[in-house]
Length: 260
Image 1 (tube, rainbow, N blue to C red):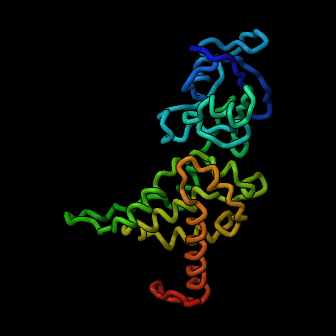
Image 2: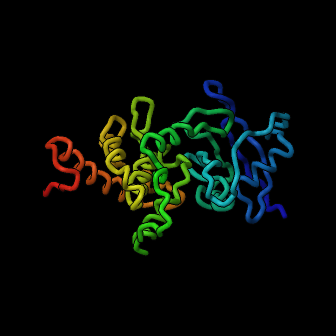
Image 3: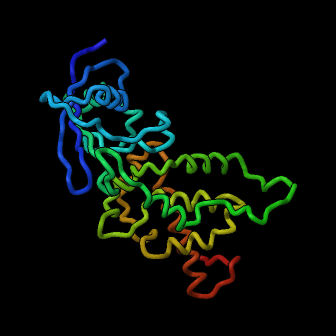
């Protein structure tokens, strides 16, 4: 049942050729942004009555797990599948909602962006557990429940890009990998088997675009849809990178930790 109207103002087009279009939609209880975009897709007619091409956006899981429906909603990085229209209207006090693609990633079309840079970062930090030579029939190493809980929280990262979009250090003049990549270093280093690549990962964070380029704005933790404590991950990795730096500079043995 409709409860009035609201307007979606959407930034459309491709890289270098973008323009705004407005669409009027019916307000319905429980309607989220994906639902509103689906309604527009059925009949893509602008507020001025012009028939246009359907709006392009991505979606998959519809339960904030895949990260594909990332977009700027009233200027805030969000997952469209879990944003309710009524909540937006209450928060802003306006029935006009602005949607735009992320600005830190190449625009494919309309609200669709290319997040390849995030997956390149995962390759760079060796974001995997090496198992090629582990064919033992024995059980794997035990992990305490406390550590499991912490690791699970870190593992929920869905490479949605919200933390990078909100970070002032991620821009065209910077090579900073962002909070998501640093958090994944912490996650894989915490795994008893994944720790076999710990040195490689820490030394990657020592390189250009690594942890030293973090400006501590803390925007990342504010916008993370999964509420991952990203600033804690960055702080811990900063400490571990410092230790690894001393090992490299002074030729300390791998099992020798400098005392501060």
